[in-house]
Image 1 (cartoon, rainbow, N blue to C red):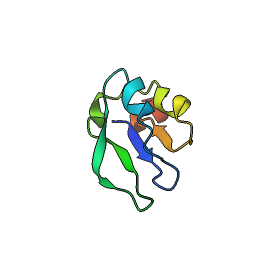
Image 2: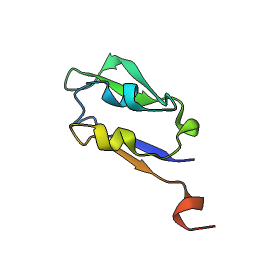
Image 3: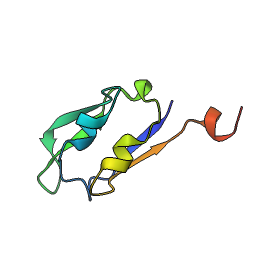
Image 4: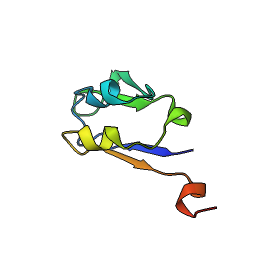
Amino acid sequence: MPKIIINEKYCKGCEICVEICPKHVFEMSKELSERGYHIPKPIRQKECIVCHQCELYCPDQAIVVLEDDIHEHGK
């Protein structure tokens, strides 16, 4: 399963990742971050197809998508 990391220090809650994801992996959190923003949470991480659209479109470069071990090691 891919791992999706959201850096809360950079995310401003713009929701671009929520809108751009073709698999609807993200949902906005109801809680506020330390900076006072609602940030996205990868609630359907298993559905991620590792297209990296969320990373590419994030204006704050707050998202990193890591492929699972099977893809990383070519097994």
